[in-house]
Amino acid sequence: MAQAFDDRQVGGVSVASVDTFSQRLRFRWALGNDLRNAYLGFLLERPDHARFRIDPWDSLSLDWESDKGEAVRITILVDQPGLTTADRPLSRRYLQIEGVPPRQRGKSSWALAELRPPAWWFRENHQPFDVGRQFLDRALAVSVENGETVAPGTSDEVRIYSVELKAAKASPLPALAFFLAAACVASTAWILGRRRPVPPPQNHAAVARILSPFPLEIPTPRGDQIRSWMETHYHDPELSLESLSRELALGPDATSREVKRLFQETFKGVLNRLRLQEARRLLHESELGIAEIAYKVGYGNVSHFNRLAKETWGRTPTEERTHARSSGEA
Image (cartoon, rainbow, N blue to C red; front, side, top):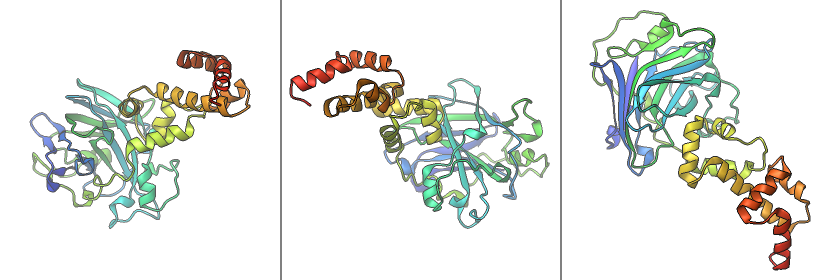
């Protein structure tokens, strides 16, 4: 069963619909300045809302395209034992990642192991932070909607032709794919290999009551998350765009774009700036050796540290320390 939801019920202009003529899911958004009230997407679930298993599969694949290539968020909602209840929709465990649809029709895939619960979910449900438990044997639904990293004022249209579960060493099984045909109302029933009666096609499915609280709350702005993470982890020599992506439950492309939007520079540029800023402070205010400072701020190679310092400051670390002390800056 496919259900569309959008922000028109709160005065928005974003529209999600099932396009029966071309057999695709389609959503078009036009975001205002308040992103908390701009949302739309689709929920794919079994007609009886029962659980189904997706743990035998390795990845989720979308055949899709968009007009502008803006970020889209993919969510698998699962039943967490001892927590999820029917009267609390947000108690379902949210496993999310963001991706960027191609400008021309094509397929994108995400390993199920890459999906992570967002930070707000743990706060909402008073749970300790734990990204290891997936509960993919207790899946309830798959949701596709506009991404959280999309900037205010952005518009785009996304068209989705199929959603498939894939095994690493096998082609996707037809009985286990979301075939987005007609009104897509039987899609999740096909996942389970069960043929159910198909209701008459509709151009626009009803907004699901259980979804009303879901997209309206973004407790921690994405920019604040990125700034905080990089400012507290820059000294980790293993810090990379991939590790930041995993922490934020974003795809690497979406993470790179968001870092560029926030800082007007690349991830590597931000990382080197933070490291060199701290290195300069230590050169001015401490008696630590050059190699010790390099390792302390996250550089595993002293020569690399010396070269970056020379390129950035116009002086080597030793020259920078001497200059600071001779000019009274230390």
